[in-house]
Image 1 (cartoon, rainbow, N blue to C red):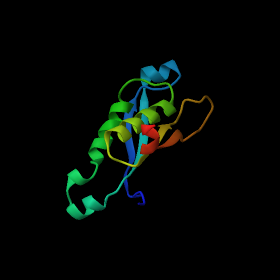
Image 2: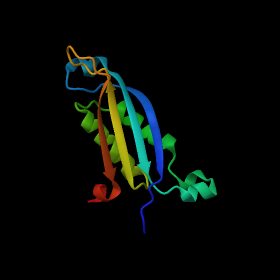
Image 3: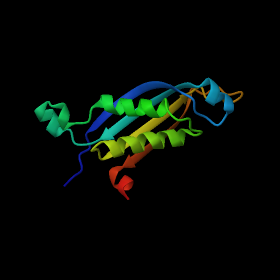
Length: 128
C-alpha cells in the first residue's frame, strides 16, 4: 500500500525566542520564522469534513510556538530537531519537514537575509 503524500503546511510562523551561541542572543532574543510540512493521509478528512479525521494545524502551531518560546538552545539544528520530534511523536503523520530561519543572523560585516536549517523526519526513523 502506497503511503499518502498529502500535506498540512504552515508557512511563515513567527515567534520570539532566545537562542544562539552568542551570549547576547540569549539575552536580547530575536524573531524566528518556521515552516512545517506534515505528510499524512487527508482523504478521510476530505470526505468526512470532520476535524477528528485529521491533524489540527492549530495544534502543530502550538507545538512550534512552545519550542521556540521555550528552553534556550544554542543551535538552529537543535531547535528544528525538537520541533520535528514533538510533532511526529504527538500526531499520526508519516513525516514532518521543518524549515527554521533566523532573520538577519549576527555575523559581523554580513548582509544575510536569514540563516536556516531544514530537516525531514519520518515516522519509521523516529520509532527505531
